[in-house]
Image 1 (tube, rainbow, N blue to C red):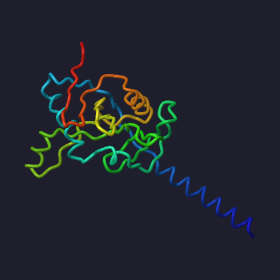
Image 2 (image 1 turned 30 degrees about the horizontal axis):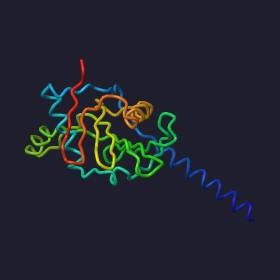
Image 3 (image 1 turned 135 degrees about the horizontal axis):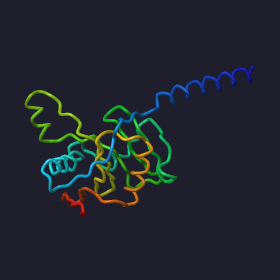
Image 4 (image 1 turned 60 degrees about the horizontal axis):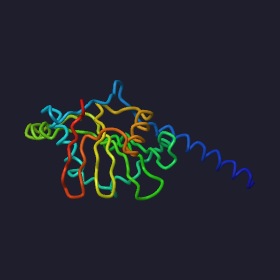
Length: 188
């Protein structure tokens, strides 16, 4: 009888895990790509201002970023020190969370152009999502690394997050602990 009960529990556990796994898939958008952002171009400057202000408006800090979405998407680019987590609810969250507490976190955030948001609010509408930003959040700063035209797939995110967490690549901006924002103009 005990074996029958244990066997039933295993079957129920497997069925539950299968159902949870089926719900755990996250979406990606066709044609998502990285778009270079240049603060010398007015439309890009507006996006940079929006990207640098949004985390403050969202009250996004290290502690808030450390909250784990429900879907485990595996380790990032061979780095067992970070796991990618995601959810298609609440802004399509994607986060590379460290195994060791206190290490930087990589997040993908939806970007809304603040100027368009103000105009849309006046008309009683919501502003559209312009794209998504890959950022890293440490205890004292937030750095924006990439702007995606749409939500990239998990493979791209794992690669790009690993690079950003290693400090490889050219950042777009950095919000410091002192409240100042530094912009980085691309070379070339």
